[in-house]
Length: 193
Image 1 (cartoon, rainbow, N blue to C red):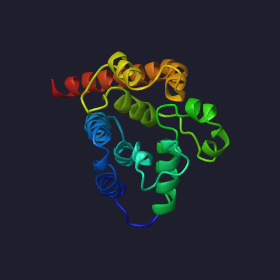
Image 2: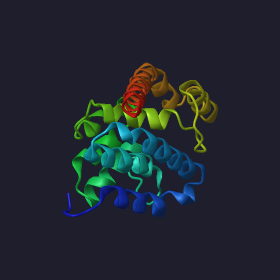
Image 3: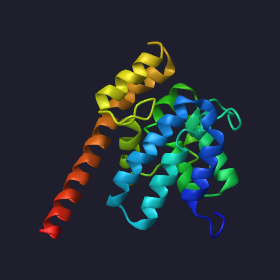
Image 4: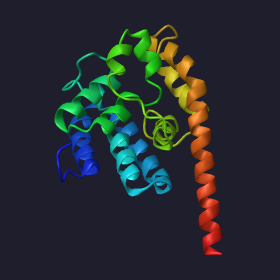
């Protein structure tokens, strides 16, 4: 990673320059960032920065400017690694929202596996933020987000096939993050009283 780079500022600059032409995709990303701002209070300063940066960049691979494989998590991760050199951030983007299922269906598992998969509260939080923000950036529950995705794709599309495999993992990550938020709010409430 380049020294003295604020990864959140860098991520915001990249997203702000590459995603606005994609319309609703940019609205979705902005909504995910808002959710990440709310959830970031659960984490240390370093983890807050990674969650926020990943929220800005999780869909950057959709940009035609950087599209390579056509699989947005992988294209975004390659862009981050090539331009920032931060493997953790690249890996969070590469594996966001259980991308392994779609990677397998696309024959890209080996390439995805070149990025280490982090199993942590930060990855859960990124899934939570992505899966509770609809296609136009509004906060929704997971069930509504799934309906939103199902509405946009054909039943036989790889995205839908992967969704069906990832759905239980999304539900677990969302539930774990909601429990963490609830515990945090209880602790803060007890400290105030």
